[in-house]
Each structure stands twice: as C-alpha cells, then as structure tokens.
Image (tube, rainbow, N blue to C red; front, side, top):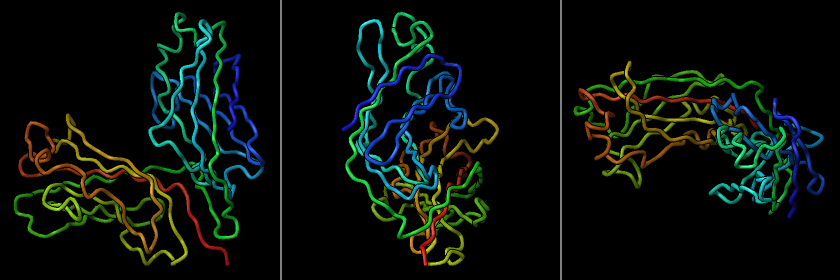
Amino acid sequence: MNRRTLKLEDTNGMILSRFLNKFLYLKLAFYPNGNKSKNVKEHISLYLVLAGANGPQTCWEVYAAFRLFLLDQNNGKYLALQEEQKERCFHGIKLDWGFDQFLSQKDFTDASNGFLVDDACVFGAEVFVRKERSTCKGECLSMIKDAVMYKHVWKIENLSKLDKESYDSETFIAGDQKWKIEFYPEGRDDGKGSHLSIDLALADPTSLSPTSKLYAQFTLRLVDPVYSSRHFEYGAKATWWFSASSPKRGWPKFITLGHFSDKTLGYLENDSTIVEAEVTVLGTASALD
C-alpha cells in the first residue's frame, strides 16, 4: 500500500503529480475550477490517474482500492473520500477514477476550514494495488481522442396500446456505429411484470468482427413528455464493452411500473413518454493476430 501527499502552491489551473507504484505510474489530477469536460460547476474535481511510459495506450490493467485526501491545515486532519465500490480497474480506455465533485468551491475556499491557506493546499492519496496484469499479448486497445457524445430522443406514443414484448427506436449513429434503444413496456428478465426495462443495443452487431469490441459510456433516461418544460427526469448511467457476442446493455429494473405510471412524477403524459440516450464511444479493442 502506498500513501503519498502533494502540496499545491498555485490553484489557478489543472495540476498533476506522479508517484511510482512498482513499474507503473499513478498521478493525481486536480481541477480547482471543476472538470469542465464533465460539466462540473461550483466544485473542485480530484482523480487518481494511471500514467506511465506508454500513456493512454498502456496495455496494463491495475486493480486498486484507494482513498483521496485533502488536508485541513488548521487542525492537521484530512478530509478523506472513498468510492462505494472499493476496487476500481484502471486500464488503457479508463485511465482515471475519482470524484467529479470532491468538495464545493465554497467549502474549499472558506478560510475557517483550513483547506486553502496562503493560496496553497495539500492533497493525499492512499492506494492499495490488489492486482496488475498485462493485456498486450491479447488485444490492441485504442482510445478515441476528443470522443463526442451523441444524443438520441425517442417519443413513444399510445403506450396503452402496446402489446408486444419489446419495441425498438429508430437507429442512430454514435462513434461510427449504428445503435438503437430497446423498450420493454412490461419489463424483461427479473423485472418482468414489475418494472419498465430499457437497453442500449448495437443495431447491427454483425458489423463488428467476432474479435472486436467497443467501449462506450451511455446514459438512458426518461424525461417529461412535454418536451419543452423537462420538469421531470429519471436516468441511469453505465459503461460497457459492446461486441457481436454482447450487443446490448441496460436495466431490467429501470423503474417500477407504479412509479412510471404515476402522473404526478411526469414520466407518462397523454399516453406517451420520451426516452433519451446519450452515447459516447470511448475506445475500441481488437484481438492481435
């Protein structure tokens, strides 16, 4: 287990610091004004990042549990944050884990809290590496630089007349692949009869070779069918390796049928609802010959 601290003397920009764990590097990434790529506002962001000689193309996987700290310089005590999921996997497509909203900027800059003293702050990281392994011999990973998020909006009408097990949205393009939303009005698998089920799926899985896969981050959500108001929203977010053998991912228990049909919650209006998908293809992988 490694525990390191970092003192930052200037909080005007993103600041990085590295520390060595065996022959791989980890680094802290600090965003004093919030991670704009994650649309973070009024908070500081802090992450633990896998680095090293090969940078984003590293073919190592590191399974680690970690905590990130911020020192109260007035009392010599640390504010510590740890994710609920105790172990995370760092790899070439997902290099960083941490906290988009580590602490509000209001609390961070409040002199009485002691986090920012004389324009300097002190962060720490405690890392326990449980396992490391190389994937170089098995497959080639490629991360997409400046990956773009694509949104698709699907309005489903006449819900009371739907009598099939599932319905598909029109196909849409994200990351040069065709996708679709699968909607199960009466649920599927362990959600059947009690929940609404929604999946994101590759529209044409056969377009991928058997040894290729896509790493995508996606959000599926229900929004107010009175589209202009958007007073109500319910969603779930995930990442997944999509492939010909695993072409879809979603939630059998997305929302209970009772909550979905509750008109006071706004997901169902005039016998219609709106499902939104946001999809970002982060990278690809293919087996080496």
